[in-house]
Image 1 (tube, rainbow, N blue to C red):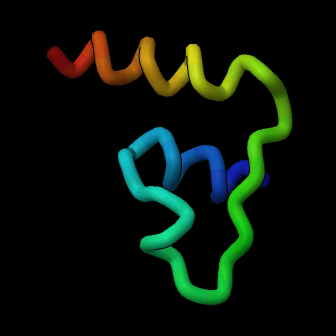
Image 2 (tube, rainbow, N blue to C red; image 1 turned 120 degrees about the vertical axis):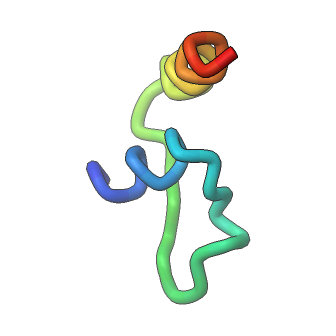
Length: 41
């Protein structure tokens, strides 16, 4: 799960990862990803 989160946080979608299953473990994953994007800008 931690690897999935780190890959998603770096902008890799599940479709980029053959053989791996990405899943959101909480409803906060979208807001965390958005926060990371805002910090990059």
